[in-house]
Structure formats: structure tokens, C-alpha cells
Amino acid sequence: MLEGLPPHRPTHVLRLLTDEGSARAMTDLLGEMFDPTQTAVAAFEAEDGKTWRLEAYFADAPDEAMIRDLIRPLVGDQADVASFETIDQQDWVRASLEGLNPVRAGRFLVHGSHDRENVRPNDLAIEIEAALAFGTGHHGTTLGCLRALADILKRGRPAHVLDVGTGTGILAFAAAKALHHRVIAGDLDPEAVTTAIGNARLNGLGPVLRLYQGPGVRHALADRPRRFDVVFANILARPLKRLAPTLTAVVADRGALILSGLIERDVAGVLSTYRHRGFHMASHGLIEGWATLVLKRGGAAPRPR
Image (tube, rainbow, N blue to C red; front, side, top):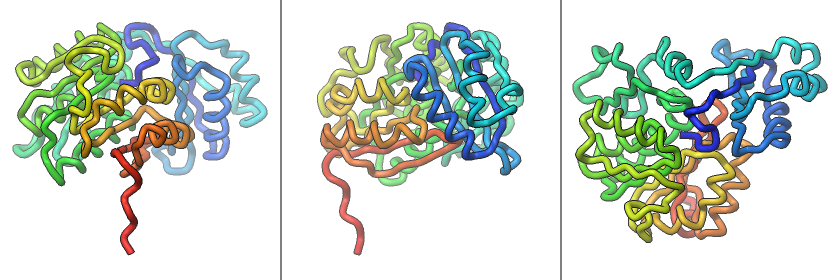
């Protein structure tokens, strides 16, 4: 879940189709002009493969006229056709389910109840019905984390997994489905925890999922030095930097820290913060403008000759 945009409050969305250069320039501009704990901005290639889509999500209603004037030097008259929409919690649920196709990452399958018939015998299926913003598995951050987990599972079976900022619970559910043992997950937002509990029951994972409500790892279930073989933190760039000391402290010596909720321009700053904590980047994925980093302790692995 992208912490910083409260899921129980209305979310205000700016959308615009334009060219790649303009979309990236607007991403940088809006990211600098607005509080990153209350705003998420991304640019990614549209379905037609020719244009790019800018999407900006605001926790509070933005001044539409001011934003149009702000982006006009970059996109000209396109500023006048930029759309603004206010989406309340129930609309998020509806929007996330309308036209929801199953999403695959390795053996993982995220689907709605209307797609149960598409589940294959070997799928690790996760059914999500009450999906909140950024929580359906379609968002690039969640999909990137699922792919990172699928890659880790090719090389071993982590014994202890922690999901910080779990949201609807998808990442924790994926780990629990694959490993068949207890997974710890928490979220700052109590409503997100309630949603995750309901989704865990829907997926038959109640007995193996331990959920807590609180910031970061500040809970007895999570605050375990060098305990976890895999730690997910799918949150925004600023919280990732702020939580670096405590997140890195709970990663096992040979564990993996999977970070997401980042747009591409945030990667260098976040990576620098974690390098100062003794971690290096093992892999880096990019989906729809959102980055996923897999970090490990120590210096970078030597390159093969």
C-alpha cells in the first residue's frame, strides 16, 4: 500500500495524456511542488504505445486553475483538457473491480470473485474484493513486489517474512500462500488492517497471518533485530527514507529488503539512504513508471568476468 494517501479519505486525481517528455517533466515538477507524503505522481506509457499518461493523486483537493497554469509552460493548450476527479472510498472499490482482469506474477494470481473460474490448479491465487486505492495487484508497485518475491522463491524458502504497510494484504498473502507458514504484516492505518483481516479470512489465511496496527516496525511482532528473511515496504519515498534505520535493522543477515512505492526519479535518493545503512541494490524493476528495489546487506556483489 502507498502510505501517505489515506485510503479512508477521498482521493483527488489529475490525469493527462501527452508525450513522454512532457509527462516526465510534469512528474518532476509536481513532485517538487507538492508534499510527497500527501501526493503521488507517476508517468507511464499508455495502452496505445504512442502516448504517455500522467496521473497525480492528491490527499487534499488541489487548486485546479493553479495546476493548469503550472503545467501550461510544459504542455501548452493540453493543460486545458487535463481532467480532475474526486474518488471516494466506495468509488475506489468499484473502480478497482470494474474490468478487473486476473494479474499474474510467476505462480501468483490476483483476481476478483468474478474470475474464480480462471484459477488454474497450480496457481497461488489471491482473491481481493474490498480493494482500496493501489491495492488490487494491478498497480505497478504491488506487481513489482510480487515479481520480486517470485524471483526470491526460485532460490529458496524464506523462514520469516514481514510486510510493512500491508494495505489490502496482497504481499503478505502471497508469501503465506507460497510458504505455508506464519507471515507478519502491519499498517499505520487501522482501516487498512481491518480490510486485510477480512481479505485474509476470504483467502483462508487467518491462521497463518499475524496483523498489527502501527507505524513501520514499531510493534512487538515486527521489531525483531535481524529476524526477517524478506521484508516488504511498499510505501512512498519519504517514509522509506525516514524508516530506513528501523527497516534495515530487522532484515536478516542474508535477507532481502523489497522497497516500492517509488517513481523512477526517487530511486537514486532512496538507494543512497539505504547504502548508508550498509545495503546494496541486488535488482531493480520498473512497471508503469513505478520502481521496485531489492536490497541486501553488504557491498554490491562482484560482477562476473
